[in-house]
Length: 373
Image 1 (cartoon, rainbow, N blue to C red):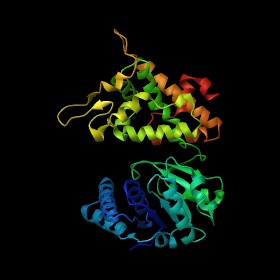
Image 2: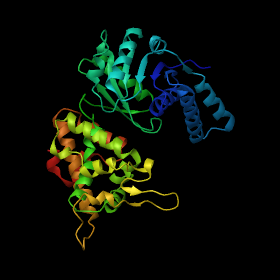
Image 3: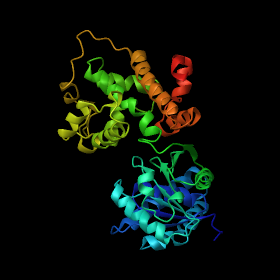
Image 4: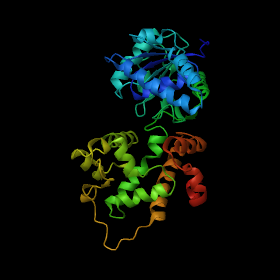
């Protein structure tokens, strides 16, 4: 067995934890995983093994070579029973547990007590304050930062690197180089609500909802316009896939975290659907209704609490796309001016993390130069 490139400990064997573990294993790292839930490690290991086999197939390896490649990497994957064991010899610990501040603070307090002084402690949170989590690391808050991977971690290239208020710059640089060595593209964000992607991309859904609220367009035509413009899916399709409850919670957290600006106010249409139990694909109904035998069809409830679209309405795909992209670009400019991230990192984040055909500043240069000014 070849020597390992480094040692990672992952806390949490769910979808994100397993995905991050797979990324490190592919890069030649040894990985320990801690998850107290019964059967969690075995499920995570099975997910990792399946992911490695699929990656081996994409590499074009022969059957024997693929099996050897997968087995060697799985040989570096070990379950540990305690947080202390996980952190004891790790170069880097990444926590990928439940999105609950109290739970994360308890985890980081234990990690801080057990980890060596050079061990970096990272959280994969997408919404919580890094500084608030780091306060639990009473001895060494300077080694705590955010490493926000995107799902599915083995496929998505973007990682948001988020230092907290007291994070040492040398720790940030080391963590950045580690994820770059894993084949990822790191972008740096300040510790603020939504970081880069979950803040700057918020108008992708919010502005689309505003159009429906005002009776300016139908759900399906908005989705079609964005798909035709090069986005992987439309905003309503995306919300149905993620889950309307999940998306509404994220939208509310960013809105609250930024001081409740009216431009990012969560939509009453989305709130009504969530209250109705129409959460998207997972419940069979969201902005669309889903059946096994038919293609999705728009859910009338999505328009029931909005102004009706006027009779004789003619779709304007270019206007729909321009309005949504302009709102995203405006939010990008606000984030840049607030020091959240550089223009280059914001463009990279929206391209790689949200599937935009181009970043908002790159788009604005050709469509609305005042946003770039």
